[in-house]
Length: 99
Image 1: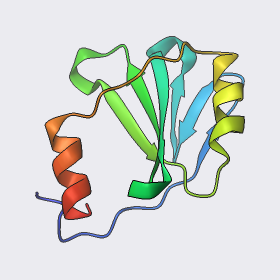
Image 2: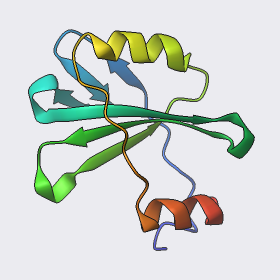
Image 3: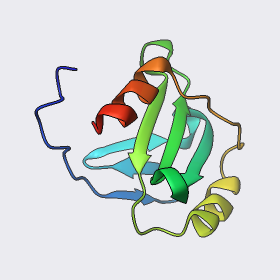
């Protein structure tokens, strides 16, 4: 709710041999428990979810915009297990509000 009035920050992300880079931050594969790609064209949802091993920062949600989700999935399967990540109540509310 606090961020409702702000435009989302656009950051680049990349997948490399050491981990997933999001902006200036690199999440090493050792820090990531699993990944899930949420793709639903009807609802305009296309995002990569990373479940971190840290209990206080459990998930990172990354919009993947123009990336091919199938290709992204194949790359990530080389490094991480794929486990479905259920949306939290906060995720569902933010999508409804367009945040």
